[in-house]
Image (cartoon, rainbow, N blue to C red; front, side):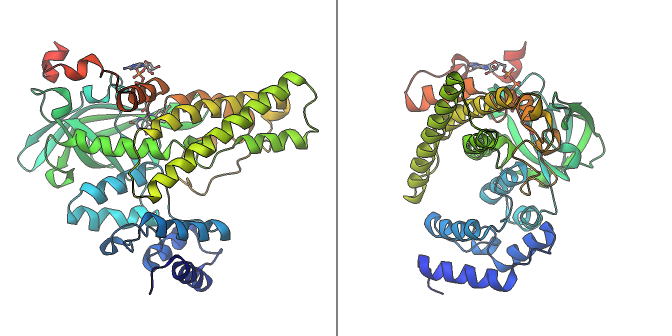
Length: 399
Ligand SMILES: Cc1cc2nc3c(=O)[nH]c(=O)nc-3n(C[C@H](O)[C@H](O)[C@H](O)COP(=O)(O)OP(=O)(O)OC[C@H]3O[C@@H](n4cnc5c(N)ncnc54)[C@H](O)[C@@H]3O)c2cc1C
C-alpha cells in the first residue's frame, strides 16, 4: 500500500466499511482495531502499529473523528503505562502488557503520589528493597485514581536511599492483586469514590516487573509525567472529552440567552479564553507535524486550560442555579473513553457536580503553580528550585 494521505484515507475507510459494527462491545471493537492494525498507527509494526509518521496518523484520526467511531483509549493511566512500556520496557514486557491495554482488557492505575510527596514527587518514601530475584515493598501511595478497578499499576519506589533523591528511584509494574497490597477508599466532595490510599506491607514484586534499570526510575517517571501533562493539557481533559465554553453557551442559548450585561461579559471572556487555547493547541499540533516533540508548552496550556475549566463551571453554576443540579443538565452522559477507570463520570452528571469537581483541575497531573515553575525554568530560563541543586542524599535530607 502507498502511504500517501489519500491512500491511507482510502485504506482506513475501506477497513472501517468492512469492520465497524456498532453492536460490538467496546472491548470487542478495540480488539478488532488492534488486530486490524488501526489502533496505534504510530507504534512500530512489531507492536500493533504501522510505523506511521505524526502526519499519517493524523489522517487516520481525522477519518475516525469524521465517522464518529471510537478509537482505542487515547489517555488515562493505562495509556501512560503503555507509552512508558513501549519506549522503555523490554521485549517481554511489551509482548505481555501492551495488547490488553489497547483492547481495554486491562485497566491500569498510577501509583506515584504519596501523603508527603506530591509536587515534590522525587522525595517519595515508599521503599523497594532487593532480595534476590524479588523486591520487598513497604509504604503508601495516595490519590490512586481507579485503583479499585485496575488490574495493574505503574509504581515508583525508592531502591537506594543513600544517593540524591532523583537517583535512587525505580519503576515497577504492580499487579493490584499482589498479597500485601491493600486499598482504602477515598470519597471526594462530588460523592464519587474515585480515589484510594494504597498500602504496601512486605509486598513482593519479582525483579522482572521492574521497567528499565534499577535506580533509573526517575528518568522513566519524567517521561510518564510529561505524557500526562500533554494529555491533560486539552480543555477539560481531566474529565475526558469534557465540556467546553461552546457547551455552556449552547446551554445558555437553550435557556433563552443572557440579559444581564455582567454575565454577558463573563461569557465573552470565556469565549476568548477558549479561542486562545484553541490557537495554542493548533501551534502544538503544527510543531508535532513538523516532527518536534511536545515540550514545556504543555505546561503553558495545562495552566491556562485548567483555570478555563474552572471558569466554565463557575459560570455554569451561576447561570443554571438549582436547575443545574438535575442529572440531565450537564454535557456528559457517560464517556466511552473511560468506561471503567475514570471516576468523574459517576460523580458528576450535571453542571453543579462539575463545579464541585473543578478545584481538582488545577491539582491533578501537577498543580498550576508547578506548571508555572516548569515554564519559568524551561521557557524563561529562570533558576531551578534550590533543592534540585543540593547534593544531599535522600536519607540525609530526611534526618
Ligand atoms: C483528580 C485527581 C486525580 C489524581 N490522580 C492521581 C493518580 O491516579 N495517581 C497519583 O499518583 N496521583 C494522583 N493525583 C495526585 C496529584 O498528582 C497530586 O495531588 C499533585 O501532584 C499535587 O500534590 P499534593 O496534593 O501532594 O500537593 P502539594 O505538593 O502538597 O502542594 C500543596 C500546594 O503547594 C504548592 N506547591 C508545592 N510545591 C511548590 C513549589 N515548588 N512551588 C510553588 N508552589 C508549590 C502546590 O501548587 C499546592 O498549591 C490526583 C490528583 C487529582 C486532583
